[in-house]
Image 1 (cartoon, rainbow, N blue to C red):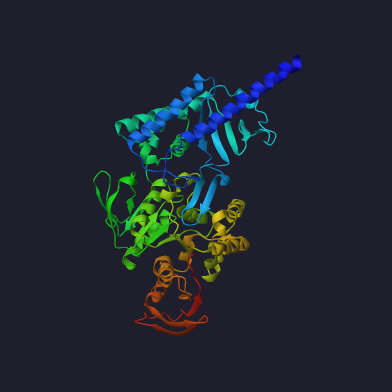
Image 2 (cartoon, one colour):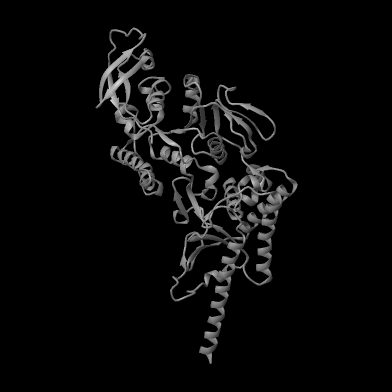
Length: 498
């Protein structure tokens, strides 16, 4: 009799677990808005306020339905930090899979039912204890990451849902910083607000602007570009000697105009300012400079994508010859793992890696004194980069990464100043941009510490013919008089951009 009762209890528990799993799966499907994107890809789409309000109401309704049925209320969101939840396409970048193998399930209320999770089918793996109080509950063909969260975390989500709902209803906007200071004790730190907002954006499949949440931009732009901001302000990016701060509401920018020939994306603000001081934009006649001041924020990536989408300008990246600089370049080109659900609005797949290439370190004869040894953190990042899917699509990138690994030394963009203070703006970049991927001439030489004339020689030389790495004819027009102690030689090389 006892065995029969035990079997009955086990069957009831098994059915409850199956029903809960089905409920999670159904909720995940029901919360996904209709989109023109491929059905297997998560892609955000601009939506009317009424649609966003309705989507939020549906999420809350799901929570209420769960409670009324005696089940744990749950929110389901695709995992944003796993490579097995994305797909790489060269013409778009890193895209989130709609039916990801791993999803985050945020469980409200009583979590103990998940701690008793058992095998649901004979072919299903057991649940495994995870880190930080999590459980991995395998439900073939899906694997859910069950986050057992305290009540205050649930309150964080509900608080932000409430604030977003009010913002959209009243057609007003708020920064992520303002949301944090609305209840700093509840949120604890700014990164919590950032993560929750991005999760909600992914969950509803709308860009952050549709949630009426903004963030202060850190990126700057300079050069031949004019536009009107959302508030009606007319912006001329040539008007400031230090560049113009990118708008906080990029989607509202209108009437963009430019006669630029190309866009140069610069990793660091210091290099960006140095190029402006050296008159790079004037020398190159018509171009646009953009910097994200390190790892680019969403606004900078949105802005670059918007310009590229309108004008289809060639875009080049100038980053440090180290793993972290290379990763920043890939974020501009192919996107980031955490924002893969918004790849179609953030990536610029046609971007070319102009420099500083690891192969440039030896080719240009950069002094050992300004090179830096690779740290263990650098090597770990490099190993991780080599394994990423987009490296397989870029064999020349792989060669550069392998060269960097073998060399064991890295170099920053500023190391080019060891050749000449204006070598970057007057020699390196013009040669790279002018000659494209073909063989090109660089003029190198020793110089007196006080002499700044050598760097100007490159501007006055013209390559007539070059074949088989041999210079056949070179003409220097109106060459400056060289000091007697100075000598120069010609070096041909394949300084390519990838």
